[in-house]
Length: 300
Ligand SMILES: *Cc1c(COP(=O)(O)O)cnc(C)c1O
Picture (tube, protein in one colour):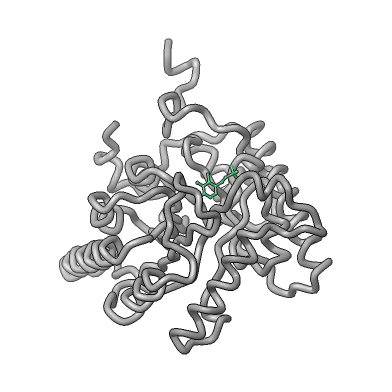
C-alpha cells in the first residue's frame, strides 16, 4: 500500500474514522493499565511512574488515533503519546497517516539494511529500542543526519518544519540467553563498546538506556516473592554500564515489562513498560494485519 499521496495532509484532515464503541473499549483498557501501574508504584514508594508505551503492532491506525485523540464526547484522561511498532514498513505507513504529535518507538527485530530507511523516513521517531550492534547504531546515526539535512533544506525553502532532536537509543540485551532472542550478551565487551560508540561517535543519537524482552517462562513463574531474573539482570547490567562509562545510573533508563510481567518489571525499577495485547487485544497473524481497516460500507 502506498500512502505517499497523504504525506501533505495535516492531522486535522486525517481520513481515519474512529469507531466510538471501539474507542471506549480501548480507553477503558488503557486506564486499567494506568491504574495497575499506579497501584504497583504506590506499593513500592516509586514517585515517578514508568512511561507507558502502547504497543500497536499489527493493529489498525484507527486504534492508535482512538487513544491519541479520543473522541471528544468520551471523557478520558490524558491522551496517549508513546506507541511501539515492530515492523519498519508498517511504522512508515502509520507515521504518514497519523498525527505528528505521536512519539514512535521502534521495538522490533532490526535488520541493518533497514536502519537508514527507518531513521530517515519516520516522522517523530522518538526511540529505537532494539539496537544490538555498532553497525546498526552507525546506520541509524547516518539516517537521522540525512533526515535532518532534508528537513533543513525544506525549512530554508518555506520557513516551516524544523529538524528533529537526537534519536534515543536503547541497547537490547539478551538477558535470558535464548538463541531466538536478539540482543548483546550481558556484561560483555560488546555491550560496553556499543554504548560507548553511541555516546561518543554518533552525534545524532542519544544513549537512552537498555532494553530486554526476557524469557516468557520466567515472566509466567514470577510472583511478588520470586522476581523475574531477566529484570534483575538488566538492572545489574545498567548499573555496570553506568559505572564503566562514568555516568550516573539515573541517566540510563530500563525498558522492561510487557503485558504479562510489567508489574514485576516496575518493582525492579523499570523506567518504561511496553504493553500491547492487554490494551489492544490479541493480535491478528501478520498476513492478515491491516493499517487501514475497511468497513462493510467500503466493500459495497
Ligand atoms: C510485542 C512486543 C511487546 C508487547 O507485548 P504484549 O505481550 O502484547 O504486551 C513488547 N515489547 C516488544 C519488544 C514486543 O515485540
